[in-house]
Image (cartoon, rainbow, N blue to C red; front, side, top):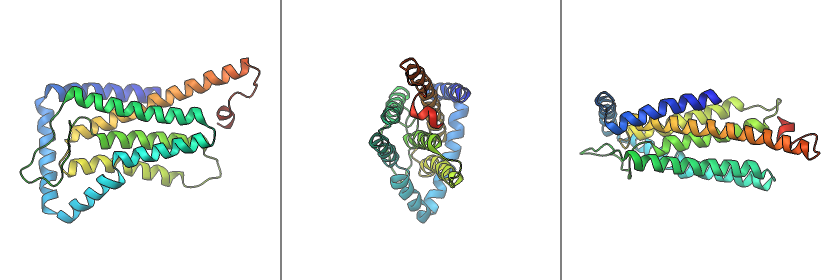
Length: 227
């Protein structure tokens, strides 16, 4: 997980710089892909409507945040409060990071004479892509901590998460409200947040277990005993 955090961060940073300085080959690539997909969206209004439903309801950032908030409430109710706070804190940090980078880069969104959708505020990184990555990554990790060998359906859940992450980004490019590199940046920053959060969680659990041993609790924390 440490290598994932380093790699995603190492890829996200130069991408951010190239977008911020307006590197011509990158802008040319973005424009080429965006124009091609916009023509497709204009030519197929039924498919565009489907994409709008998916992006506005199924993969909307508030839908994703609602899933994370519901999970945090459930964990709190089950008295797993450290995990609940970790989940909520990571989501809040991701939102702050996303908005901070948007304000820093201040990239214009694509503009079309015949738009099929609209969006506001700066383009980089894509909030849909980043929020989907953070939410799905965190929820899969929370499930993995509690998954039992006899249970089935892990592949299905992982598949749904993957489709959600990819779909959230794809719909934004297809609808012409983000450049491709906005979505790539959202995915990279989102995964970096997940990886750092998992590393922080593991460190916290080890520290909590050592504290428990010093305080006379030989089994450590309940989470450590069940992993």
